[in-house]
Length: 292
Ligand SMILES: Cc1cc2nc3c(=O)[nH]c(=O)nc-3n(C[C@H](O)[C@H](O)[C@H](O)COP(=O)(O)O)c2cc1C
Ligand SMILES: Nc1ncnc2c1ncn2[C@@H]1O[C@H](COP(=O)(O)OP(=O)(O)OP(=O)(O)O)[C@@H](O)[C@H]1O
Image 1 (cartoon, rainbow, N blue to C red):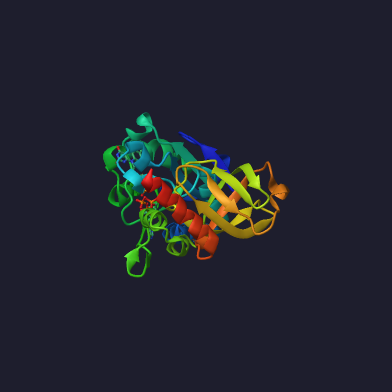
Image 2: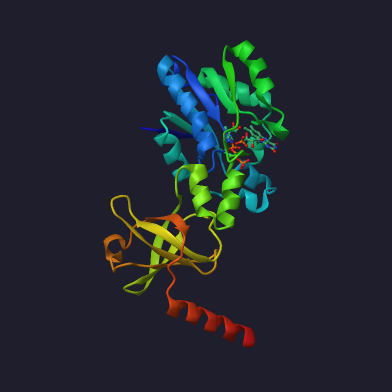
């Protein structure tokens, strides 16, 4: 069971007396590259009987700095990210609020005031990992600090798919292009958002609104699973405008079974099952708009 801490400075956790193995990153989407990094921490940590820790940030540093454009829109809510990190076997997740004062912590202070208190024995990062004010900390800085504080730094090579590096940015592009199949392959999970059914148009058509500002594929038709944790139904979702609600067309009128609760919408693939009369209706509507 994952333990989830927020904003721990100078931590002194009794469970870490023996030592810890740590990984650090934004981990949005927890894609297969992240999973490899995490599984190295978990495998080696368990073997040596150390607690395993993931350190992460919210909001995403890219979003905070506002320089990512649509590349910084989120794949996962903090909750879904935590859930995926926990499912990969990490013991402790520490999430830091990435605000103005946090962003100006120097690399040395990040090591002294955050990492050292966690009693690290080994820190696992990918090739490009940077940390601290203006990104001045890197693997060389960690290796040097390890000589003083008694930890190792392990740098993992990037995992690729189709000779291209897997990254959160690549998953975001795949979703923006409506390529849900590629997004699923890169994450090893379907793209999912939690939200609420806010309106019932008729027994077969409801309106879903996401709880969190998560990236959506473009307007179009998608095959989805919708349901709560116990119950899910494969059906069809229509996105008319990615900033608004999503229309769900139900295969059978079963929505009462999860009426007021949070439901999870998982995008399986782009849809191909649109009916003829719906296509006609759509064309007609579009023509009228152009004429008026
Ligand atoms: C204490 C701290 C301060 C940071 N300050 C900056 C900064 O001033 N400018 C910047 O571009 N990124 C800054 N970052 C973000 C890092 O460059 C990087 O995005 C973050 O550590 C997450 O790593 P990842 O992008 O590999 O997931 C900072 C990170 C940390 C931990
Ligand atoms: N393909 C990969 N293989 C192995 N490690 C990776 C891979 N991608 C990222 N990492 C590592 O995972 C940690 C977290 O990375 P981060 O969250 O910045 O992922 P990212 O995919 O590079 O995100 P973004 O595309 O938004 O920059 C870092 O240590 C990073 O080096």
